[in-house]
Length: 174
Image 1 (spheres, helix red, strand yellow):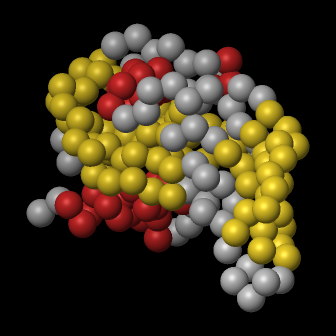
Image 2: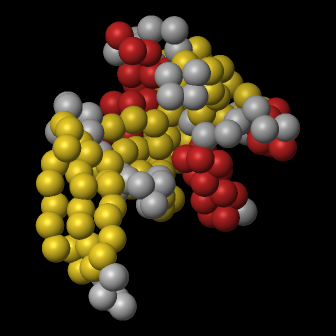
């Protein structure tokens, strides 16, 4: 596959949309619309055998969603551990003594270039919460492992990053 042209359709502080004209290997033309977003971080905050989750309203879905802490900077801020620590503190008030990188997830590779680094946070201590305006109705709660897995089985948790991150956690945890 070869890109023959690319043009930006839209841009704001958090994402851009581009349209790429391509040529398939057989020579036939094609078109891709791609949402470009900065790298994100997801934090699995573990404490006493349980997991800290946040619940927030997800406008595109029109409903609230339970998820692991996650987020991104506008305009390609520094990814990785610095972003993970900032998101954890912002959304839950928790600070982590240690972060372990579990892996990277391609969030929706059929439509966006965005990827997400997944971290496990341990040694948690409380601190002030500093949520953004868009997060003002966010909830935060500690769930036991059994409660989390029950929510996954029953389809209460549908966020793809949370589902994939938990899989990485289970594969890395004895």
